[in-house]
Image 1 (cartoon, rainbow, N blue to C red):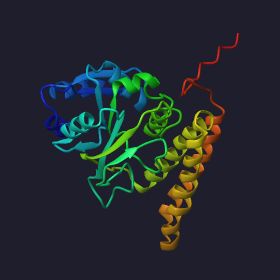
Image 2: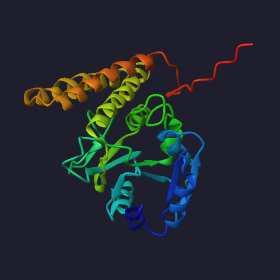
Image 3: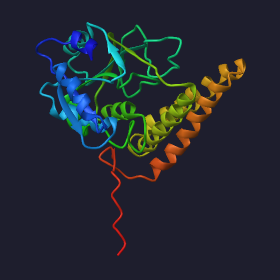
Image 4: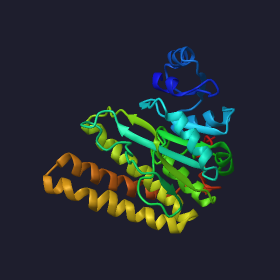
Amino acid sequence: MTSIQRALDGDDELIVVDSASQNGSAIERIATEAGARYLRAPLPGVNRARNVGWRAATHQLIAYVDDDVVVDASWADAFARSAQTHPSVAFMTGRLGALNEAAHGGVAVKDDAHAATLTRMSRGDIGHGANLLVRAGALDKIGGWDESLGAGARFMSAPEADLYDRLFLAGYEGRYEPSARAWHEQWRSSRELVRLDWRYGFGNGARLAKLVRTDRERAARVASEAAWGWGVQRLAAPLRDRNKTEVVRVVARLAGTGAGFGRGLCSRVRHGHYVKRSKRPEKP
């Protein structure tokens, strides 16, 4: 919170969205002391919280940061300058490094020094929701974030990848902006990282199952990346080095991808979003 306060000026608006936590009063107190506007999402889920935040915001440039991320003092200015320089770009992903290089485990890191235009043909990791700017008009056009994806939701992960897919399909382009710098704190144990990789795979499988129905051309590229980039290529080094933990992580992600793809195919999609599951009526 302190790093974000340093990065903002008087015209910026700071919103803290509580994702239905059990200690809401403590979060509200911290947010209020920091001069932030506190909002509470009625149900858990990172994408529910993100939707609550952008819909309540009064500005057109919506920047997102997770609670385990520290931003550079020039972070907000870098995003604002780039958004002004590139007015046709709908979203921007920022540079995301690791606070502890030795322990980051490859989680939520995009530490590339070179700017890039992001299009429907872009491949690989194009940036994270933990350091992201999106124009409110673009969010409105695609109906915001899909609340079935991401931490706390039934598909567990891939919230930003799905968002980019739908923005691309709507005709928008993005930009990777390395001058908007932030650092992610990796706090999970090795065992927790294995479970996280399974959830990453599960969410990406659900994302792929949606793409099969909405954008088959991009679906083919995503499937190739899942099998080759996150599978065969990533598996080579740990097999050579006999690193059992990393092998298990890769296998967990691949298994999760298959499970998520199957679950996604069995779920309905409407207007680019997974349809929320309705409660079954009680038996008489």
